[in-house]
Every structure is written in C-alpha cells, then in structure tokens.
Length: 221
Length: 120
Image 1 (cartoon, rainbow over the protein chains, first blue to last red):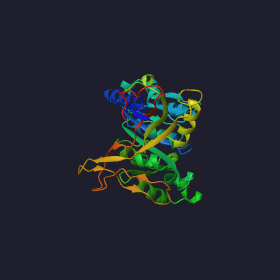
Image 2: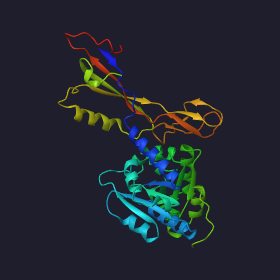
Image 3: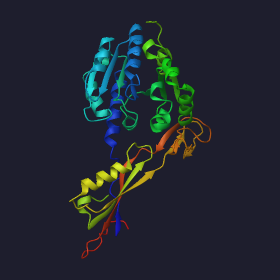
Image 4: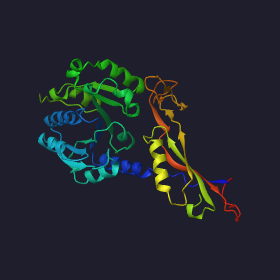
C-alpha cells in the first residue's frame, strides 16, 4: 500500500477565476457591483428598489441582475423603478455563480452603469461559497424570520461585512428584539456593519448606501 | 504529480482536503462518492475528508495563524472569527476555503512491483 500525490489544484478554481475576471471587467468599466444575498422573503428586492430610486434621484444609472430559480417578478420590479435589468433564472441551482453572472453582464451596457446590484437566489447557505466578483457583498434578513437567523447560518454572517435587518417596523408584532440579532452578528463578525431598515418606507436606505461607500445628495422621498 | 491512469494497482482511498469555510456537506459528498464510484475501478474505495483549518494574516500587526473560535453552545459548531486574535484588526484569509484531492492510496497489483515514482 502506498500513497500517490496527485494534484493540489483546487477543484473549484474555475469559480474563483471567473469571479476574478468579473471583478476585473467591472472595475475596468467603472461599475460598483454589489452582491445582495438573503433568505426568501427577507426583502432583498425591496431594499434594492429603494436604493435604485435613491441613486436615480441622484442622477446615477443603475443596473441589476435579478437572480431567481424561476420567473421574472424581481426583474420587472427593478425595471419598473428605472433600472436596466437582466433576468437570470438558475432553474435547479440554489445560488448564482460567477460564470452565470458573466453571461448576464454581457447583456448589460456596463459602460453606462454607475452601480450594479446582483440579487442572489433566496438562500443563506450556498451563496456564501460562490464569489461573484463584486466589490461588496451584503446579506438582507428580516425580523419576521426570527431573532435566531445569525445563529442558524453563522458561516455566511462570519464572512459578510454588511447586514441589513429589514422590516424593523414589524419587530414588536412578531416579538423579535433586534438587539439579539445585532449581538449575534457582532459576535460572529466583529468587523461587520449592521443597518436597521424598513425598506417599504425607505427607512435605513441612506445609512445602507453610506455603509456601501455611496454618498447621495438628493432626497427622493 | 502522477497521472491517475498511470497509477499502478487499485485505488483504495481518496483523500479530499476541504477548507472549514467551504459550504459543502461531508454527508452529501460521501453519498455522492458511493454513487458515482459504483461499478467503476473506484468501487469499494473510501473517501476520506480532511478538514483544513482556517488561518488568517492580520493587516495591522502581521499576526499569522489560527483565529479565535466562537464555541458558544448556542451555535453548536465552532465558528472561526475572522479577526486578529492578537490586536483585533481585520484579517486576510490564508487557508480555509480549499477543496482538492490531496492523496490517493494505492494497493499494488499482486504480481507487479510498486512504482518507483509513487511516494511511500
């Protein structure tokens, strides 16, 4: 019996190469790309809609890639608020990957865009493992999912430095204390920033844009 | 490196090295391995999964090594904290996201010599 060393090439190296290529292309075109992850129903689309409105009022051109298993509901919502959007159905995949995103980027007028939001499929597990090549990543959770979301999905929160806690207006109604979520997040990610939001009413959107390093001057609402 | 199809003998063990931050279930990998190797020369070989611990490099003080682990019982698993254990600054990840085949263990053919190229 003996051991044979085969190869140390990472089996997922291609993913990383694709993500690096996306990062390079986006930087070359001057597009600030933001990956938005989060559970189903957390309010990812609403948070992005509000940011699009805010950025549009500031005269910026926003693009979106709407990732979903099926359908084009989010894509139509983004288009309705003025984004240049591409729909990306993954069918049987529970996450986006850099290769799919590359092809979606090819359909966008990147040179005209200032900001690109890439909304992942609703999921708090797999997306953590698939870098897309964006400059920033954020996770949206909502109080209606319970105050234990961070404890249930620590890997994604430990690796994501920006978290939006959405639907804070419903916290009392569902008996959730946002302080519990904030404390859990601070424990798994001491360098992370958490923003409390009520996206339907535009609450917290300015703080979120500031956390993403985007300064807006005008006020759309 | 030795090509798989030149390997003398029967492969009895595949060692898969997996970073602890990889979101990939050992249970699913073991099940898949059993299914995909059925009726192939790898049938009855074992898949061993070796975790690769997270290590970090501090951007501020230069620390290199293991981060602190959050092992609060309410989390049930130890979670590496991506922060410098010495000075608290932000860190770069050095290891913990790998996925590669580290080694094959080969049983030599009964009548043939062990390949001189293979490492013991």
